[in-house]
Length: 277
Image (cartoon, rainbow, N blue to C red; front, side, top):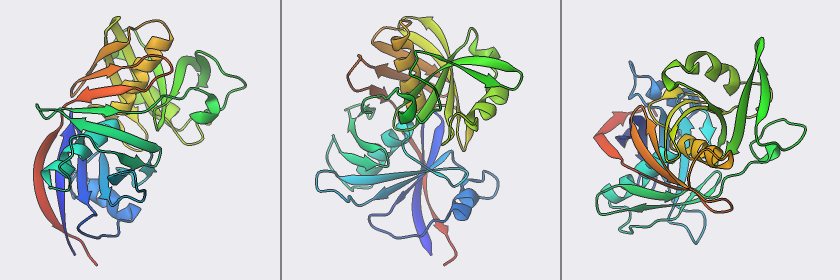
């Protein structure tokens, strides 16, 4: 079976994108893991699937799979690439589209410069909504990891995030603490872990260890979660530039409102792969 695809990225967070509106393919977890391999496959952080809508008030359905084959609820950089993909493939001419995801509806909009602005929906904070095991709601939580404790906030941006404020992003224990928290018993569905350094009230640096993938060059929902957490803690203003290793995103949020994310996307190449029937 020959399958057409695009390789795309948002700030270095890279994706294989497949149109399942005009072609059909059965993608099992083992096949996804093979495609994700950077030596023997295409190589990507996530696989994005464009599917026909299942609801009358949306334009497309959007599914996301991590490099380990697990399906996840949301991906901020991915939804921006999704919006550009459906335009480049001629699947829609709309500038503003409505897309159903595993976690709800998102609305990406392409501007004249090719950047994509996305209504990411309202964040959630209650432990049961993350999900996160806690006796009661709190502004921050103490979590035992190994022989010590770490202080973190929890935010659901369509997928679960833990946010840790650090003094120096370059010295943050992403490689060691990230995987321990990702699979911590208090996060029953695992968690994405963000390490945020506050530079000013409108500027932060961020590194994210993503569940099922590891550290990526950028994470859109992670940037949203970090800014929301910083605003809730009184550290940030309502609009913030987030510096990620792959580039910058602008995140805007006011309490009791939705989160807006704006950033660039790029198509790296288009290809055709032969899959075994």
